Length: 257
Ligand code: PGA
Image (cartoon, rainbow, N blue to C red; front, side, top):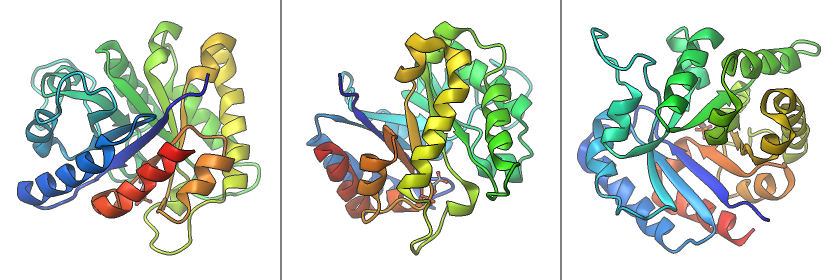
């Protein structure tokens, strides 16, 4: 059976007002509304999540809201933090964990990422684990990805992995305006490698069902190549997800493949 494509919008710390957020969200929702075979997930900043999430009609399974992070504790004295249950209560069904920007600017180690993944999966959220190397230093970068996956998923029972998604995002390819994304050929190699790492962790029944996405400077021009030739089930999109026309084009491409 062909699995549906998953296209996730990671807005990061954008836009700067709720008004703008509503406008981007509504544009995205309109573009996603016509699709049948593609799941669209929009991950706005926390502060917009409840307003935007509550405007998604219940039962509309192909358009969902998600968060960009969470804290692993359920509640308590953790100033500034947001729990999985809080996210669920405002309509989030997905959460991104371990994005390279969180690892870089907030010192998130694989151990912290592991705690966050556990909390998200235990609460029933779909967790998008981001992995990716800083550069392609031979002999080093493959080990780096392996550690991110193995340590990130350490001690998690297989039943919980049904709601796991892996996003491969090479750090050097993120946030570029020009043609700086990875190539579908290289991403295909990486997706095969990631599946190999996942096999002993998830088992042979579940491993093929764990979606692998590509992220890093995806735009309407290169999206098709990744979706067709890179062995991935979808895309994680940063800056182009803030332009509904561009994001909408990518959704159309996903739908027709
Ligand atoms: P980008 O971001 O599409 O702007 O490269 C992707 C990401 O960091 O998730």
